[in-house]
Amino acid sequence: MSFIVQRRFTAPFAILAVAGLALAGCSSDTGSGSGSSAGPGPGDAGDADGVVTIYGTIQDTEADLLNKSWAAWEKESGIDIQYEGSKEFEAQIGTRAQGGTAPDLAIFPQPGLLGDLASRDLVQPAPEGVASNVSEFWGEDWAGYASTGDTLYGAPLMASVKGFVWYSPAQFKEWGVEVPTTYQELLDLTKTIQGKTKTAPWCVGFGSDAATGWPGTDWVEDLVLREAGPDVYDQWVAHEIPFNDPAIKSAFDSVGEILLNPDYVNAGFGDVKSINTTPFGDPARALGDGSCALHHQASFYDGFIQDPANGNATVGPDADIWAFITPSVEAGGSAVTGGGEIVAAFSNDTDTVKVQEYLSSPEWANSRVALGGVISANKGLDPASASSPILQEAIKVLQDPATTFRFDGSDLMPGVVGAGSFWTGMVDWINGKSTDEVLDNIEATWPSE
Image 1 (cartoon, rainbow, N blue to C red):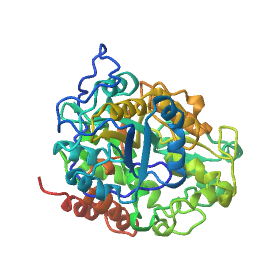
Image 2 (tube, helix red, strand yellow):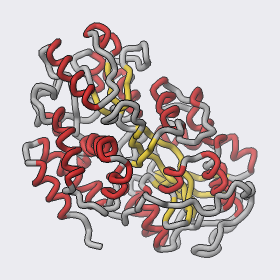
Image 3 (tube, rainbow, N blue to C red):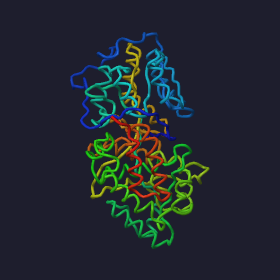
Image 4 (cartoon, rainbow, N blue to C red):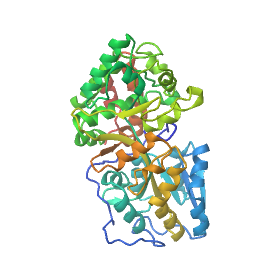
């Protein structure tokens, strides 16, 4: 799922087919669009009164940084941006949109939720200036996640790169091992470390209160993309192939070579079943104290590793802990999964358009990323703006034209699956239920067309 610092919950929503989505109104000769209104859609909405409201899931310290990121622009533009963060965003945004109390802009952490509202004509198509920015500064994959049919409805905001494997460079040097370039080499590396240390190399935590199980979905998504490729990944997410398709079973089997092997997990915490009871943040401490050699988690995890409560380890190529992307089946593969947000509008007055355009620009991306803790896939972002080496590395991955990016699959699936049976299925699997039974159970929960 979409991630900046904490896991966010989703409500049921329609799936968004990600393959073949086209950008609307993004030709190279499109003007900046400043002050322009959105194209045909739900109709004129909102008045340019100098105030633009934004609603989203971002809260607490992150919300403070969000407000700081646009403070200078507010003074220059004379527009007052009023942000509201809520834990009930997914449940409330549809109700507010239908009830006439929608914000001017909303920050959607799930493309599927935006796609659901767009399919019901509750969201404004993106104005020309936003479409122009998306065309220039964002890849086609990202444009697709902000589109429904052939219409662009918003622009990406922040992002995360998933599938990092965290390790100690000093330990690798001590053991005489190197960063793997294929998934088989990762399995070989695991076996080598286990042989040298006589302890489980991997530490894994699926625990996340009501969302327990989500870290396991990230493992599976990584392997579906790396083994079966982006086309099959898209078909899986859109339910063009069933959840119990052989390609998905193969991904589970590959993940199981690590997660279901009692010789390989769970360093510092217990046996295989302890994965479900270990909070997802706790392996950061095991990495820092050296009791765990390998851990799979997204780019945001450096904040957990460097947290004083977890030992205050440093992150960097020559520091205490560093990371590499989970390798593909074949050497040289460049497919990654990740998450992010999409900014879409319910109003199309000139003030709202100006704010939406600014949030889709490199100027805003550099302003926010420089404040720390997050990244963006905006091509105009300077990687040096990022607050840590791993975030700089993640930006380079996102900006690399050779990278094949796919949004977190569970965020694109109906909520009853992506934030329901997929999570609980991972827990059941770790507890010993067979792969076939788990996949059949998840498939049975997919909403009928």
